[in-house]
Length: 96
Image (cartoon, rainbow, N blue to C red; front, side, top):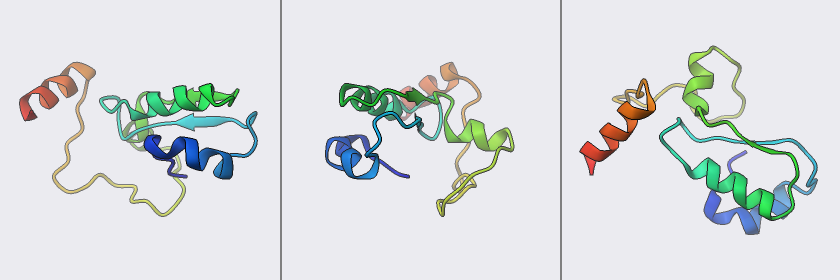
């Protein structure tokens, strides 16, 4: 499910009523850090089994693991994943 970090305090109680359920947060890849923020906020709200999958959806997809839901499973046209965190940071710096 998609739970935007900026809406966690409003949506989590409705969408995630069991505070002991396993929850994994993730972003597209390791250069995006919103999932870390979301995991911290969920833990602060009393969720006890929260983990952050730092490598993200790209890593999962590249490993050939199954995906669920109706979100596109392929990378957007023109998108090229960074091969390392250093490369990702350099690309972000160059873009800004």
